[in-house]
Length: 264
Image 1 (cartoon, rainbow, N blue to C red):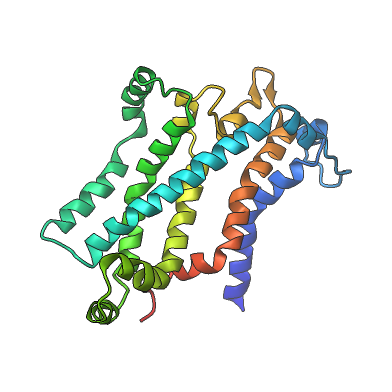
Image 2 (image 1 turned 30 degrees about the horizontal axis):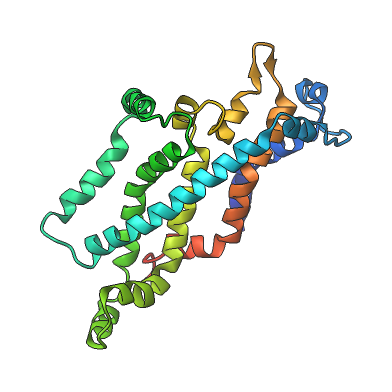
């Protein structure tokens, strides 16, 4: 009973900032700035109308496009790599895995200047496809590591039986492996979606108007006059909804995927 109560308290404590953000989006700016905070107020949609009047839809579409396309590319590229590193390991498999994860140790600030120069030289600055490529490269190492762990949980007897039945490699991947590791693939894809959706550094430095994403749009509420707390909360709530809905829709696959191999 005590453990259950503590779990609920911790869960509510983690959820409270999100709830407060959503509630603030329905306040007026004066109520959002009030000290002490206004707990009882008449909800208004004025802040959401202001967010749409400022043109949030193109930013949302850019984020959706860059996030979905990069996630699809990551899964397509990570699947054969994870298969090779788990089902068909070679002598240098550990070195390859270390190389993959070592790319995540490089500070993003250290590569932004050459990336910016390359984008300018190739006429790819302020281009959504630049973000797609960068997000794919950013998430691919993590995806390979995650999917490799899922593939390693597949019983080798299933693959041997498929080979005996004359299945080719594409058939084994499509008809034997993928149905078994589908929850893991869903968990990997969702994590890639979250990382890409929330990415700010590349977007703010390599885009201007045409390819800017939602995180860049949110920065516009920080002005020399101060923060527009109510509008910022409304915009942040809108920006959070797609990822929250995706996580809610895939929660069963996410839990199954992240817990694969935890219980034998």
